[in-house]
Image (cartoon, rainbow, N blue to C red):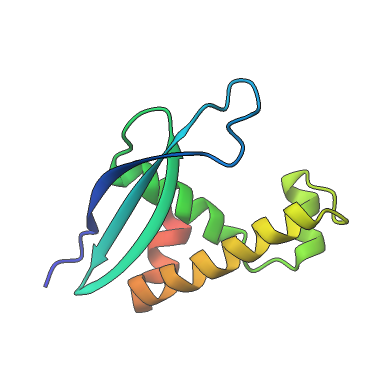
Length: 115
């Protein structure tokens, strides 16, 4: 069995939720990551087709801060801790990180914190 993360990227064309802001006109991609027989799906927004490494860089970055309490995470990310949108983003990061932990299993720390 391989230790390499593989996956597929499919264009969805969905506009990013933040696409109304100037310079943020990104479109959606559905990315399936595979590792040691396990799978994880991720929505990803970009101006061009992302590589699996692009997606991994982002989910690893998100996961590396996911153990922080909301107030600490919000402060480190520059969010207002009274923002419902910021809290919803933090919750999404928590859910994504739980999926990533299932995908990577015992290799989670080695892969996430080595990046």
